Amino acid sequence: MYDPSKVDLAQVVAPPYDIITAEDQKRYYRQDPRNVVRLIAGEVRASDNTEDNKYTRAAGFFQEWLRTGILRREAQPGAFIYEERFRDPLLDQERRRVGILAVVELEPFGTGILAHERTHARAKADRLSLTRAVGANLSPVFALFQDPLHEVARLLEPVMREKPRLSVTLQGDEEHRIWSLPVDDRLKGIAAVLRESRLFMADGHHRYETALNYRNRMRLEHPDAPADAAFNFALIMLVDADDPGLLILPTHRLLRGLESFDGKELLRRLPESGPVTPQTDRGQLLAAMQEGPSHRVGIALQDGAMATVDLSEPAGDADPVGRLDVSLLHREILEKHLGLEEKVLDEERYVSYSRDPDFVLDEVAGGRAQAAFLLRPPEVSDVLAVAGAGRVMPQKSTYFYPKPLSGIVFNPLDPAIRIPRL
Image (cartoon, rainbow, N blue to C red; front, side, top):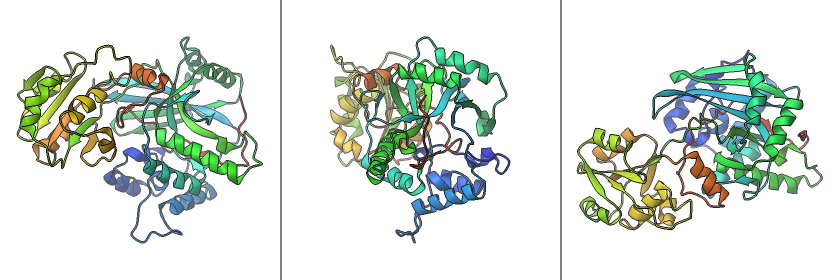
């Protein structure tokens, strides 16, 4: 962990690497020379080579910060309670989410740990190079567990009445608070409850698969290492699937550079996919997306035309993926009317993504995109249903908000470290 007597925690934490923009990266670099961005999303330089690159520099920063006491190892093993207080950007109200930061034994997706989204090779290769260089989990994966009797919450409650060990307030009054959970009967009781549940991946699929790939490599390099060696585990934030603070934001689509695109022809053909309602302006379009029947998609075109279309769910379709709004958009509009199949979408050549509806509408209005497709977010129950059925959603289907911060805790993967089983 960072030593709070040596750094201002609010200046050194950051969100996960995959939502850090180029501007964010520059800001975090300026903010503090010990900011975690230097580990998780380091600068790429023209002079980079095999001996000096963003991975080797991350390893150098990590070791230097350990050596100088900026980072300090915990004296005893344990876990942490992680509470996030934040403002819901959709409803403009306060929310609170509680999780447990702990290490969990790795296993492939499919039995005890379930995925709900596709992953891509390039991102996993990048994260594996970083993990091999630094030898630590630098950011937690985010997973959901099921606890129908809410036993875990009852075990956490007495601890959370005490003063938190750490408290970090970021811009926008977003507050992150941490309590320690030593290895005692309480933590063992939590582990006993969690053993009865499957884990449903919420965010960090690439990081989890990277941890698996790293484990497999380390097993080859250290064939005599015991089963409780640290590299057999991964840092995960565990949250009850019934936590009222769980929030998923929608991820909208932007169309760019499709040579055959004809907006007028798309509007003409849209009624084949469901009832179409023209919208006069941005405010009316956004309001229409907050009401009305399920499976509603908003559309904005460069010529100023706007509409909503209420897509029809296929009759008798028991597939939880096929019933999702994002799947209906991909199948009924992007593929049926625009010829964009999933393999083309995977290339991210024509379609990009944003969670900001004003941004995507501005891009279209400014002529920088051909069309915007607005979506509503899936429910947590959709994530559980898809993962539980052994299926995966299209890419960029879920955005759990906010992300757990990078820089709260780090998990070293040294083969000499042993993880106590609970």
